[in-house]
Structure formats: structure tokens, C-alpha cells
Length: 206
Image 1 (cartoon, rainbow, N blue to C red):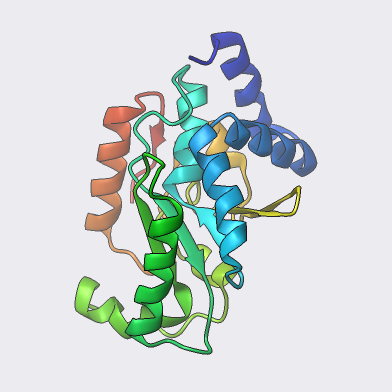
Image 2: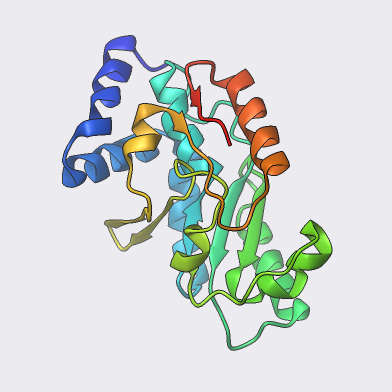
């Protein structure tokens, strides 16, 4: 369990300078032993332009802001990378198999995505088309909420953050729609599900 004083101190990061926010995010992520294990092992896969992102990051922070265990309720650990040299489904499955094998002993569900091929299947899954992404960072900028549009990775011992909307909403526990590619129904479903797990979240209307 995370102490309430520690959670209150973390909440102050919402309006802190960016450097302090990044340092606070690193501390929070490192409190989640599963996230740390995933980050370290992803490095060994040698994937291009990779990040651990979305719920694995945002929910780790929200857990600690609620005084919960860092890994509480984290459904998926989303691994994204960007490899435009081979956007075939077979290559995707190969990477997914390698990652699954590498994490087999951990109690995590890994969701692996090559962002360079998302446009090839997006219409079939979600009913409308999107243009090809140019990088993992661009893909992260289209994720459903500002607070979850965050990716982190390790480069050796260095903690790297991609946060196109900044870190204020994450630490302020504000769920705000990012309308780049999602519709209202997707946002509402996520927001309602998250609010039931983390009741101190402020849900902004569509």
C-alpha cells in the first residue's frame, strides 16, 4: 500500500516543473515491480522506437495516488514499437511470440503492437480508416485520453518519457478525451470503467 502522505505529495506534481514531473513519474513506475521487470526485459528484445505505455503507466500512477498497490487493476502492459521495414502480419506474430516467451514467468498480459502497421487493420476493427503513423511517438499522440497518452522506456539506466500532452492531467487525475481517432462511445466506456476502479478521477465530458 502507498501511504496517503506520499500520495498527497505525488498529487502536487500536477503543477510542478516538467523535470520534477518526469522524476516523479520515474519514481512511481519503479514502484511497480512488474512494470520494472517488463521495461528491463523489453530492452533485451532490441525493438526499434519502443515504449511501454497507456494503462501500464497511467494506472500505476493512479494506484499510488489512491493509496493502492502500484500494480492494482492494471489489465494490460502495452508494448508498442515502430518497424516500417516489415509490416506483414507474420513479422508481427514473430515479435509477439518472442515477447510472450520472454515474459512467460511474469503475471502480466502483454499487448504488443507494431505502430507501423496499425493503419492496415484499424478499419476492420474500429470501422474507420487512419493514415499510417510515422513513429511510435505520433501513435502515442492519438491514444484515447491525454493522461494515458504516455510512453516510457529504458535506455540503459536512463528513463525516457514520451508525453505529447504533458504530465499535468496524469498527476491531477483528470481523464480528458483525446479526439484524434476515437469516438465518444470508446471514450465513455473507458472513462466509466476507470472511474469505477479509481473513484478520485475527474472525468471530463466528451
